[in-house]
Image 1 (cartoon, rainbow, N blue to C red):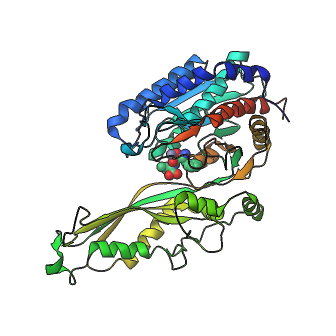
Image 2: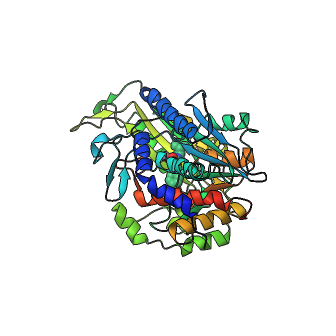
Image 3: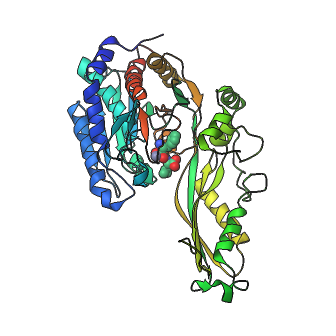
Length: 461
Ligand code: BES
Ligand code: ZN
């Protein structure tokens, strides 16, 4: 078993407090990309990151886009023949609301029970920062890195990364690399390091149903006028059959089954369904028949309601027939489903089931392609050795139900293998109140990534 180089390990130990302090400073910046009143904070987070990358020895630029800026930093002093690695992460975060459900403030990072609590602690500032720390460990102890490194950090991941694919395309030559490394995901369980083999894609819609030109008295009009809330409920109910399969015609047509050995590997993971249900306070699970829970989450596409709005929802009773209704609906996609094709299928289906007497519009909000890796080759072998060095055991291969739309763009536009190695944990509350990263994982993550750069050096391959 390889171990982390002792000088790197010592440097990370000695600088542990400062690396925590820096992370806390980064987390204090409320870089909420979805909200225009936080635009200056998003820019401040970019500037903060820019400053650090420059200070540790990277040539750094903050490049504006039509949205939030990209921070692009390069260090290209590795020995001849060394590979070039691109590290991607995002410095934007989700909105912190509902604020009253946070135990400590979302933007005042707090260490409690071995976890660092703050919005962005795990998704993704903490995981991006541990990469920067690992790079600094190399440059501070040896004055050099064993590989060339490009750091690309964006500020729009949480709002769909609309400007990143064009950015990658535009800077294709500059971003050319042998591997892309990303930490923006979770480990299977505490102590079990994990390499991701897949991410689902996304197609997100808003459905608006308009009925009469005003809310109406439900006694004077109800029974004769088509109710937009009921019409929407019917539309939504038609998305699944009685067994839980998606019933939109054509939805599964391009689904390419996961290879048997990947499914077999998933079945071997120590997943306890009873625990999973207990954790969520639910008495039963749903979804497609014929698949295990992990297979449903990682290998099957979905169509889920994210929100609904119609009629009177205030205190007490109001007899009203609503004039409009609205739902947010998103489909998680698996290879080889295409977000645009799914949009067409869903729209056609909605039109075919919408009752006469209401008008229905479907608006696509954002989307991204699914991704699957074959996990063959030196990048994944190096990652397995580095994770083993930091966690004391070999990684497992997992899938993921979430989406990082740009991963597919990286693989396609840069023609490089992508390594997704995350240090979050189940229950981390990403996007929710009390988001946290385990301090132990933060520390081991820095060590794993520091080891990874050595493992990728040509002399080790
Ligand atoms: N880090 C997550 C993606 C993720 C979640 C990876 C869980 C692995 C495990 C990312 O920041 C995210 O939240 N992505 C969004 C998609 C985006 C288009 C809003 C998602 O999955 O909902
Ligand atoms: Zn996220």
